Length: 220
Image (cartoon, rainbow, N blue to C red; front, side):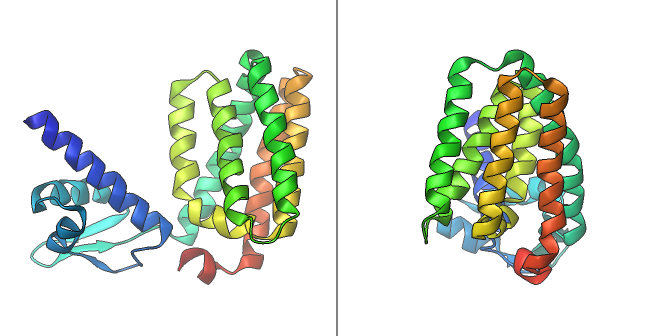
């Protein structure tokens, strides 16, 4: 029974977190246990446990005798995440040089080809986002470090709203894919120093381009 309850609260936690990160719930919005429970078809207990876990992650604040409210991701959080990611993505590419397989390199090259195709089409922002997700997932897997993969996957997920907006810009989508191409070339050449440098630059370019999209759009 305890394992079932834990599993249920974990599922509820991931659902609420996804809704916060995707923008369904807005900053300072109250998260009502009964309403969420009714929506998800669960009792208040797993919702309450999930909200406590979300408070530990900094996405929710719980005010005694009042309720739980969305904190979400701030501008400073996003900048911090990308600064940290820039270092870790570089490390990931460096390690991937030693472990990446031919099959993974083939997947990355196909990913670049498909991204190039969709970048030239209107209304294909979702496909571009999914391909970007897949590109980084392959790299994380190729690092052969479960710890690094888990950390980067979490960071990647936390800024999904920002990534969705930036990659919807055709110019950034094309530039991002070209940066991916250069990373893959370094991986194929087994040039770990170059791969690390290019992966770091790839993240820094995203940081430098954020202001043009307007922080109100990125955070709302």
